[in-house]
Amino acid sequence: MKFGAAPLDDARGAIMAHSQKVGERMIRKGALLDDSAIAALREAGRQEVVCARLEPGDVPEDIAADRLATPLTAPLIARSRAATGRVNLVAEAPGLLRVDTARIDRLNTIDEALTIGTLPDYAVVARKDLLATIKIIPFSVPGNVLSVAEALIRQGASPLTLHPFIPLKVGLVVTQLPGLKDSVTEKTIAITDARVTALTGTLLPAIRCAHQPDAIGQALETLLVAGAGLLLVIGASAVVDRRDVGPEGIVRAGGEILHFGMPVDPGNLICLGRIGGIPALVLPGCARSPSLNGIDFVLTRLFAGVPVTPDDLMRMGVGGLLKEMETRPMPREKAPATPRSGAAPRSAPIVAGLILGAGRSRRMAPHNKLLIADKAGKTMIARVTDNVLSSNARPVLIVTGHQATEVEQALGGRPVRFVHADDYADGLSASLKAGIAAVPPECAAAVVCLGDMPLVTGRMIDRLLSMYDPHEGRLIVLPTFRGKQGNPMLWDRRFFPEILQIGGDSGARFLVGKYAECVCEVEMADDAVLRDFDTADSLATLPKGMRPERIA
Image: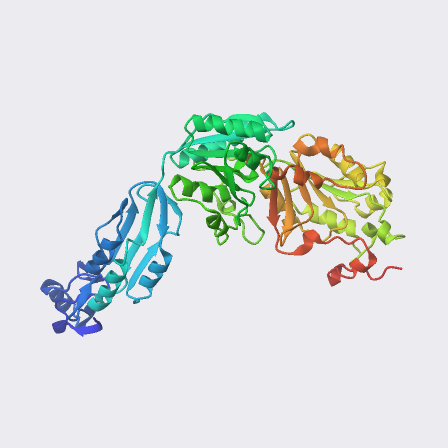
């Protein structure tokens, strides 16, 4: 193909390169320059035109796109007619798209003139969704180049395959323990039903049973008799081992466990098993949430009739980081304020900010670390308080104990409430309980901050607040850095009664393991959430502007 400016005498039969308005007529890009077009250009005073002139062996763009699209079609994959060098491939049924990425890559590297863009491998699609587009970049392709591409596509089946969803009957076993609210169970069943329905399946009546292997096994057997083609178990307590209650229930029903865990977060704690030929899954706690998580990766394949093996699970790591982190917030943060359904958005729950400042600072005795001023004259407790006040947590409560008067003076004029822990000498639990007991009833939760962590910013605290969502089961929110859990921690009011029963010099972190299904970890961009400053040596590691002049 020749491309460039050509005298009008040589341009007859060529292809217009750029749209031009000539008098009252628009000669559009891609139009064939016939006698009338040439005459119109002459009348407008043009002597030449930028055009593409085909050479022997060149294949026009629409014909080339059509020839590429033909072998790419497959059952349930339809195609549009060629136009402007483009053919679109669309789904004729809801299902799971499989893409042979190696073959698509080879096709796209044959020549810059030929391009094929597709959805990702394992994309979930609805009927009429666009699956791929073939686009010829120039106005024509050399015939020998096109022949190479056609030969490559025809080396086997199409590199695009659509696996339609199968309308499976799904059995769900929900275990129960004392203290688990019925509302949590009802919500779990409703969310599971929505997942199954979206994949064209039907959820059989869920069976609730005790959190015991024999009870789970009996429930699974009942669901098999009812015709379940897929079995799901979600425990009142998250599964933590392949020998735990849920997996053992599958074994008691005559099944086997194939694999425990997957490199998708949230979704790590999934357990893959089977009873005969029926897949049986023990779901992670995140399955209680409608947000995308690892269970969705597995369910979409099973509903599409695509087997899921232990090797398949272990290969889901790339693209499996779904959890939210400070530098990569999830798309919901950019969602419109009003849902598409037209319903009014939920108002944000009120979360109190609770700062523990009652400790005796024994590791820095005789000094109180909270009252040591930095070079700017600001005490550590003042800096921590200002950080919390810059967040959306309200009200802000300061728990005092040791040197309570001095702490209150250091925070003079700030809009905070003071709560005195009379038994602060008993340890951390005393301060925590005093603060939790003082959280106003209108607050749905409290974020508990330590008075010796001045590097935790208000923005970090707001990240935790933004992730708290009792409707989605995110009731305990804590920060992490490179997988290590830190502070502050946000607690839903549901856990206040248990926190008030804690004794000794310990906090409430043990509840994280007890209620793993309620935990949401938020990865932070730096280690501020891991750094407390409770020794003289540790103060020397503060940023220069925050270090004290000296400690006598």
